[in-house]
Image 1 (tube, rainbow, N blue to C red):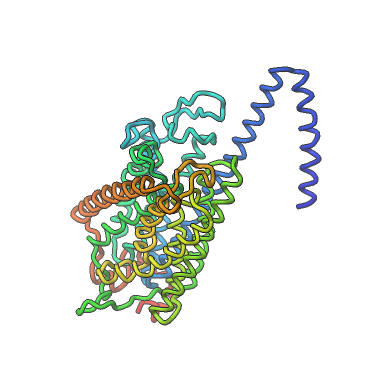
Image 2: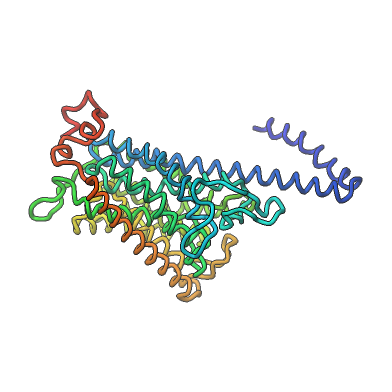
Length: 471
């Protein structure tokens, strides 16, 4: 590394020594050429950053697949892996064909109306020195090429659909899940995303959601809740007297691997949402608030499970980390590191009691997706209204309630939570119901008992161990 640095210095030094000489001799035309080169270099560096962080978010698909498959039974592993693999392909096509335009196309406060039906078009932006002429002006603030913007937003859209997969696991038909994912990424997610990130009504009201506690996680959570309510619980989950009969996952090693992959991927999710490297201090701040919230959430979820369950539950430890990450996603650029620590502590407690609450309500969520993504997506969004400090990382948010800002910001955050929640849940309920009527949602009782791997896919994940892994 030292040699590489030395070589780069030797190359760069003459360039930056000679450039001012040429500029002095060439006058305005030379200066214009230098400015153009600097702009081109900046766009190139920003593009690499945006794509690299997008690749990290894409890698989170592996994390979701490992967490979900590990927390479910071995007899459903192939089905879960197949859902997590195909869902990004479905999301890619659905978002490219219609979702991107609905979310970021120029339009009205409720939906994008330009750039629909296959993403593309002009890509002029402030970074080129020209007036913006494209169809997607909501993202004109970042100078990276349009396809970099598209791909970064695509991996977020795919995450919303993946959240649903875990909550409806072990009893949903493969085709029904695919159809819902197409509608979610192509229509539901982009519409509410336009409200907050596309220059829509909630953005104009002053709502802030930096990386998607509501835009991504709550939308996935509300969609999942609607599906779970129509699917009902898995066979054998609840006894006749209403008490819970635990259904344990088959591989906690996979869950741990998945949890760490997701934690790693979140450093693309949150810091990458700067969509440029112009403000290094903001990127560093976001990385530290993200990590701190995860760390304190792990501590609080561990302690709470230890106190109430008498043992430190590994699944709660891992879901605690994810809860902290979801909760800080909205405010990672708007709160201090100390506030992030408090947000994480609360998130770790919330996820534990949310799991108990959903079980008491007989809402069967095999992986805790509702507790992680829905409950803490809502909390994280509201936390901005409580803990935000104006311009702490450069963004003019105003101060939250706990820092003298009153209820203005908190009110905008609450309005966003309610609007997105109501729209997403109602539309998801309708879509799930239509799918249920048209093609059915749930596999047969016999198939559920035998396992979806055989019934839906005709294969086993662990054929040599079938004797004890399917029990």
